[in-house]
Image 1 (cartoon, one colour):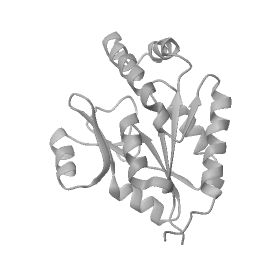
Image 2 (image 1 turned 180 degrees about the vertical axis):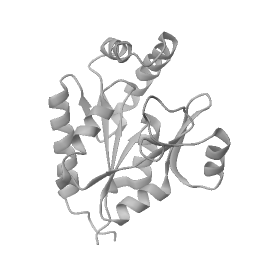
Image 3 (image 1 turned 45 degrees about the vertical axis):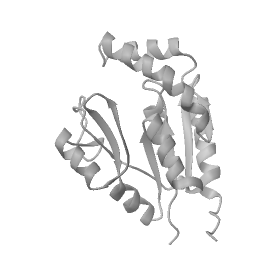
Image 4 (image 1 turned 90 degrees about the vertical axis):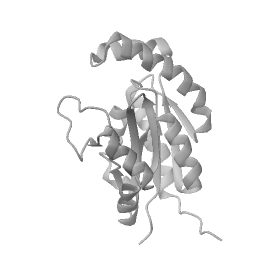
Length: 196
């Protein structure tokens, strides 16, 4: 059975990444499976352990780092770690499925470097920082202080976007979904070149 490929999707918070991924995942022909990340952040709303994230204490997460159990990880904000367990990537690609990695921007760059041509890295960008700020306010899940931190971080992340294979600007959701879908479809249907 052919090993699956990796699809890395990164974006500043509030860029519509989760919505786009949700829509793409509905196309069964792409053979996509979502990689569940580990995090130290508290659950939001109806989130479920093992479905949305593997929720870890800071000590548990640091043990995973020490044991080299993560493909990548970042301390996104102080005391807030996010990472991708190697076991998730191996489990999914071993079944011949293509693993979708919803990653922090720096994590996305690092995983692309690690997996090279076996990974497709897509950066979802908001139309502007001001549109992003308004989306975060409208979402109603973050304090104004958190929104300011996310917007400041987004400006930095947008500067990293050119390191990805492709950038999709989410000005119109349906258009952005179609663009991401086409990029993934082309990537997963192109035979992987054999290693020499």
